[in-house]
Length: 97
Image (cartoon, rainbow, N blue to C red; front, side, top):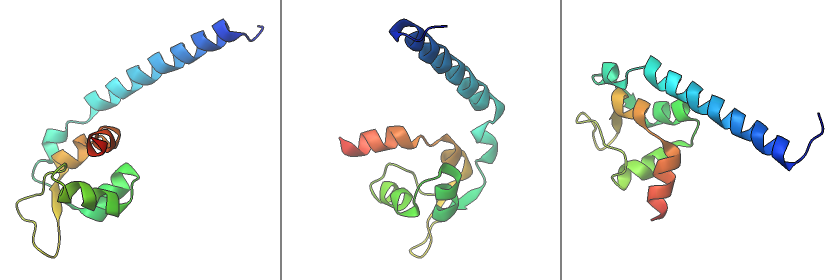
């Protein structure tokens, strides 16, 4: 097959479609609501999403991520259901507005 713009465009489109389907399957396979009672600290949430803990802390401080009611002045918790539902791409966009 000769590579040209049409072939590359079709290939990328196919990959994007497959990725969307995989993400939909992944979303359907884990119900975040099952983890409502689970408390996670900021470092745990950061590791879960592959982001820096300072990023999570900043979003919590700005009210973009809801704190768990058991949070104290010394430690901030986030509900497991909230942590599993976070989308850091969307958070990043909303924090830039």
